[in-house]
Image (cartoon, rainbow, N blue to C red; front, top):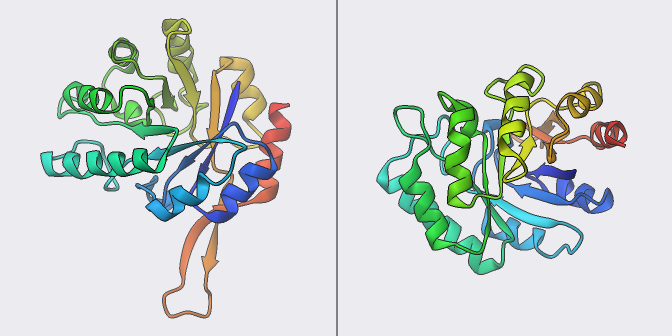
Length: 232
């Protein structure tokens, strides 16, 4: 089972290196569910040799129905990430009928045929995720990040079990969504997933003395350590 850290800060990357994570998903604005990270941040992440580095490509917060212009922007972001040498892309889009945007996903696969592709939690907005899994297998996606169509992995565990059964090792099922030290052992025992994805963050005040201080999500070392101990 692979372990992936959702990383939107330098601190997260340093912890991923220290705790020997298999992979990181790079993003920014994790408070908004994650948006496309800067090229500088991606380049810094690629300077580590201890983990695989995948970039989330998501141009706006909210849902996952995108306009043609938004798709063009994201394709350009993907192109720039690939030029840097990114190891994988984390993407996802759906159509107004709450089905996978197959044309856009096929275009991404065609443009970057040799890159690992993860379909992110747009999967949890699908009307019938179990029936949609075959489409991603046919397209050649490497993995799906999901909470089983619910806010948390534990709430979606029945759907997750169905997904893993249907996948039959043809696509990895990676679980993410409110995973913590208290529930990680139960999640693994109930589902036996291919991978686990979490951030181990907490809200902290950034630059308290500044007029522009904000509450942002930053990694908590003890939270991350607690989850890893639960996995072992």
